[in-house]
Image (cartoon, rainbow, N blue to C red; front, side):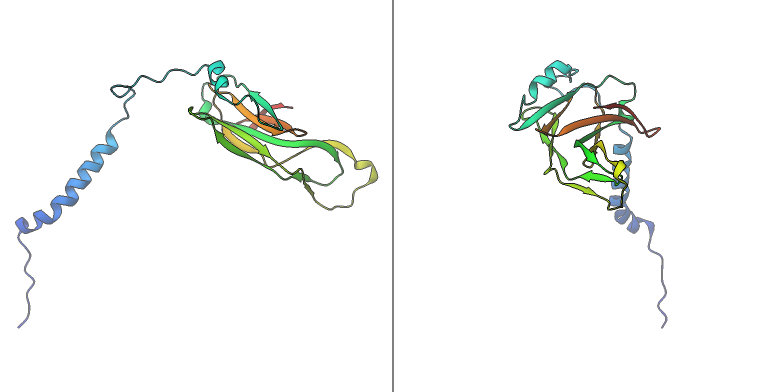
Length: 184
């Protein structure tokens, strides 16, 4: 005999579809909710951060380091901007391309939602090895790989650089990719 496939009655399919349909409805409802801007009961609304208040939370010094503080001006669309941090040294160079070892590490301020950056380097310089004319020697800033951090005018950018090193920063507008405010 041939086996006939007989469709199942609809009432037998309903229990199998109920769980996936219910899950889909719950996910759709969650996706359409908007986050509340009111604080949860028992908490206070976040207050604006005053730059002076925030600066007091950062370490005043680190042994063997210089502290640099960058206070950024307020912008309408700060989320579209970044701050580029770079550590290095000004030194005699020739026509080759030069770079320095080193990197920034992020550290948290205990008890506060702030971060600061510490530059570490052995001061080793790498360069290309082209033959250069004798008159190509000049003094130039040789930097390590730069670090991009979010632009936030409400909190100062605090950076510690070892003694004998320099710190430079500039802002980047991500819409035009133009660098502004080169600061030595």
